[in-house]
Length: 97
Image 1 (cartoon, one colour):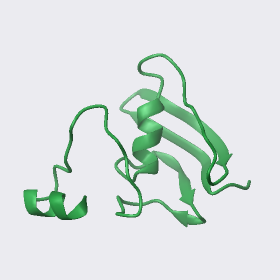
Image 2 (cartoon, rainbow, N blue to C red):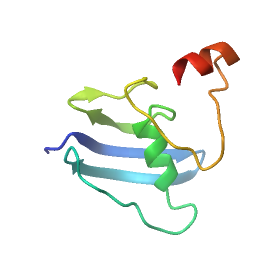
Image 3 (cartoon, rainbow, N blue to C red):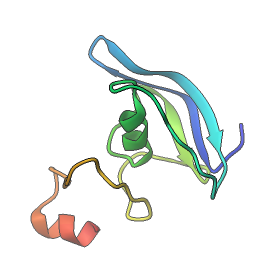
Image 4 (cartoon, rainbow, N blue to C red):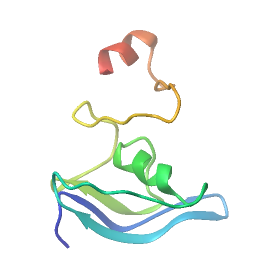
């Protein structure tokens, strides 16, 4: 598989509910991609995994060949509502941004 962003057999479950099932997809750098679907189909979960905010239950996500394992200041995400990282202090949330 090629692409700057790679989903490699990526899956995510919340308890017994499979939200993302064995997704393999390569996305080129500087391409425009739209994830379109009904509420609850996994769009936000995919983006949270790319941002390192959620871990896949199985498989992996690569950015530029590097496995995503945690948030990184080289990546950004615009949330549906205002948000902060609950595991960081206010000072560290501001510094991260």
